[in-house]
Amino acid sequence: MTIDPENSADTPVSWPRVRAALPYVLAAGLFALGLWTLYRLLAPVNLADVAAQVRATPWTRLALALMAVASVRREMVDLRTSPETGARTVR
Image (cartoon, rainbow, N blue to C red; front, side):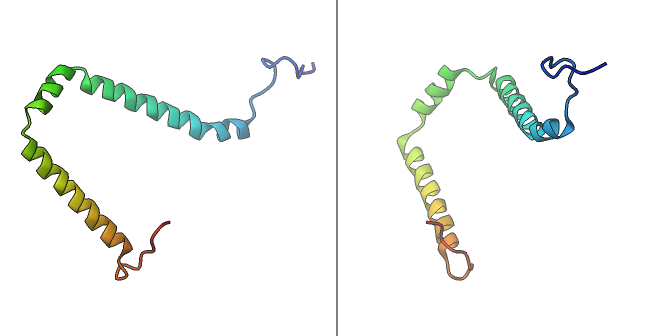
């Protein structure tokens, strides 16, 4: 009995091809699992309630939060480009 190369049902699956595709299949599966998890976790959240809470936040609190984020970001950049750390800047 000979194997017909044109009939894909008769050809055996080669292990190197499966092994090469495995990381992509695993990544797609983990991504789908993450999306499903986010969907389940965010199901009880009402977007209108979130928007109302954001609108109710005083602008001073938002300004302080933005300044805190900016200062931390500046510290991170300073540490990355500091000669004491031995790190080189990425351009």
